[in-house]
Image (cartoon, rainbow, N blue to C red; front, side, top):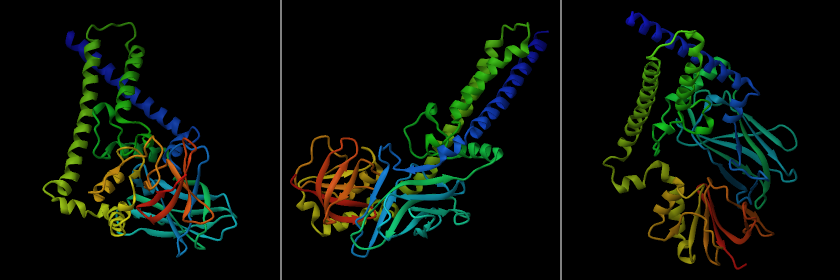
Length: 390
């Protein structure tokens, strides 16, 4: 009799979990089709950081009439999920040609695609079928060609996600759960499932918690008036099973990180690490700065990245050794003859050129301060400025 009751208990618990799983998937699909919110999360718009103006000044163009503006990516982009790229200009009097530069895993150099002019100040580029065979986009940049010294302002830089069916949505969620997150100081409680938490519709930990909670709420409808003393034990067992599955997912992520990082880092000398392909632009910028003696002419040098642990800022600081370099924009005012290196990932400062393109101001977005500077060098890895007497 006890065995029969236990079997009935387990069957009802399993049935309630299956119904909970169906409701969870149905709710996820309903959320997706509610104004295509998942596509809005996948789509990107620059500047990524919140900004009231949402405007980017491009230029001044160099002597060859060129300018490259790198667009920071929060994570590598699965190319098959994106459909088109849009640029909205705020001025129309400067004749320029815009190009979209795309770096991908399977190509050593970026591909340049001319943006088609949709109307007077809007440019578009359909990414399909350009990227059908590309797994992930690792870098995006906007290139401009036009009269030397010219500059334009743009806003509405937007990468639109590709519409998908409900079945494709579930496959995308499963694909997110299976992707490695990279080297992070995360525990099992913070597994996002994928590269970037804001792009993940249903994180594994949240899915497991909702699944168990829905199952507990549904069980009384199946139980009727019968009571089981071992009900709490049964639910604890299933909770532990779900937790173990999440832990195995986390361990799989750790082993994947080890598999990817060990061949590149274990036993590799400092010389080989310094000449890694990922550091080529940073190394070129540091070598150019040292060759021209720019660090010696500056009182202090500050690298401005996205935050205090910006990987590019850390690597550039390493390449600039033995020159003392600070990593973040200081809270105290900059002094005359200080140097500022703006990385493509940063969204704190914006250069506003004056009557002479090499002289202008650095506009601090949050404090609305303008710092007089001279543009010393432009490079795809970053722009270098010298602070002038205010």
